[in-house]
Length: 79
Image 1 (cartoon, rainbow, N blue to C red):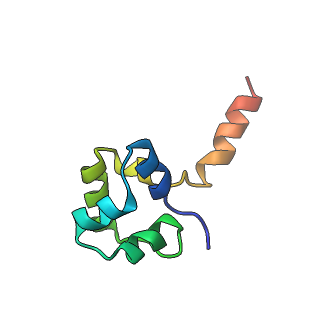
Image 2: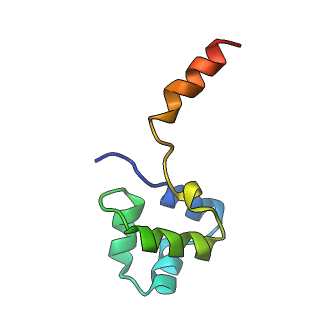
């Protein structure tokens, strides 16, 4: 499965645990574990709630889109 979210990384950056997130959202810790390993994904509303709880922009929880990567590489090679 493709890596879609950066939840595990952001939790570490914010010094929070998956148990804290599970408790904060009222979710089973196994669900949070699946999100952190990118086995499954939360819905967009849950992503928004996670971003609010962690005080980050929702974009910080997502892996950069492949669409933008070639543009950045081309810009860098033209410098």
